[in-house]
Length: 321
Image 1 (cartoon, helix red, strand yellow):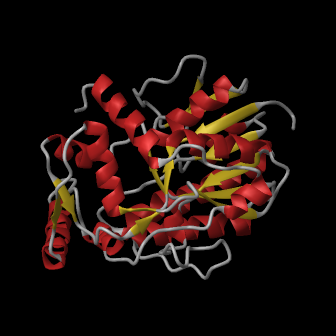
Image 2 (cartoon, rainbow, N blue to C red):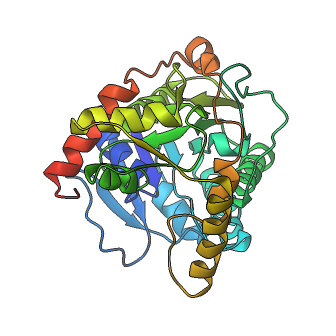
C-alpha cells in the first residue's frame, strides 16, 4: 500500500461521516469528497475535496495519491428509478473510472438490497441469484456490475444490511413515535431482519481497506437475526416504556405506499412509498454473514439492544427526540 490515505465519497452522509472519523482515528489521512459548494461540516482533521459525482476528472484529482477509495455516495430514496440509476449506477461508473486513473484500491459500499430477501431459515448468501425487490435494490446491483466489469484496480464489495446508529434518520421516525407510546407494525411482527450498527460497518470498511482480498463481495451485519417486533421492543426497552404494538393491515400499508408516490409527485418526501411497501411485503431481509468472518476476518460486535440504546441516547443529546 502506497500510504495510509483514503478518499471517501459521500463523506457528509450518515455512513460517510462515521467512516471519515473511523479512518482518521485509525491513523489514516482522510479526504472527504463532497459536492461542490456543499456547506456540510466535516470532522476535525479531515481534508475537503470538492467533486461532482459525474465529474471523472474532478474525482480523479480528489483520489490522486490515495491508497484506497471508499465509495459511499449513493441514493437510498427517490421518486423514480431514473434518479437511482443516475447516482447509484452512473455515479459508480464515474467513480470507477477515476479510481482506475488514480490506481487506488476500491471499497464499494453496496447493500443487501442488491441481492434481495432472505429469512432466518434461508438467509441470503453471496452466491445467490440476486432478486432485488425494488428500484433501489436493482440500482445497487447494477452498480456492483459496473465495479465487476470496469474496475482495473483491486476492489471489494461490501453489502451492509439495515444500518442504524447515531446520526441515522431512517429509524428516527420509529423512535419519535415510540416516545408517544406508538409502535406501528407495517409488517408481520415476526418478519426477520439482519441489522448492523454503524460502528461495525465502519470497522468492516477499514478491514476491507487493509485486506489483500480482491474481487469478492461480503454481507455485513450482526450474526443474530432480529424481527420487526424485536426491533420495536428494543426501542421500547431503551425508552423504558411499555410495548403495545399497533398492527397496520396490509391493505392500509399498500394504500399508504400509493399515497406516498403521490407525495413524491408533488415534490414532497413521504415516510412510506411503493418502494418501501415492496420491502415490507418481502419474506424478510436476513443475510449469511459468515463469509465476512471467515474470509475477511470481520465480525460485527454490537447487538441490537446495545446499539439501539446508544442511538437513542445520541438522539436525546442532539435533541432529535
